[in-house]
Length: 125
Image 1 (cartoon, one colour):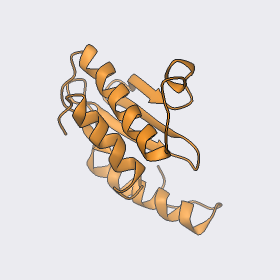
Image 2 (cartoon, rainbow, N blue to C red):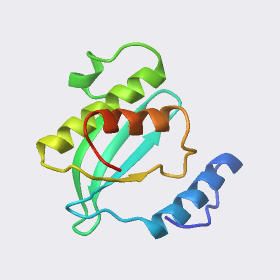
Image 3 (tube, helix red, strand yellow):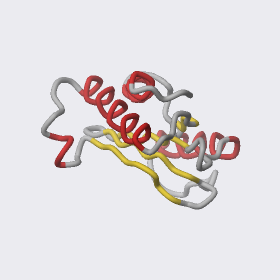
Image 4 (cartoon, rainbow, N blue to C red):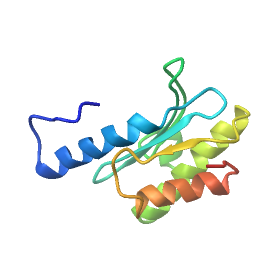
């Protein structure tokens, strides 16, 4: 991701700049994929990515039809449940460790809840 963004709000430009700094340092492998989290105002998304092959190993979001019915409560609770879902999907693929990519967001609130949910499912960070 480029460090310079021409358009968007100041907040979005700062997040993309932080994201670029983070992504310089972390990469996902087949044994230890990158767990990337994106949050919008309404939804939360998580992906496990193998950067060496460019493959997405597992995804989870509160917009998926199968998961959407099981989710309830405030956004922080839903974020924790999304963390558990992606953790369970990765454990089924025999992946036990991940590198957490907060994607330029502050490690707080819903981003932290996704990480805690994944830890509850058995993933190691």
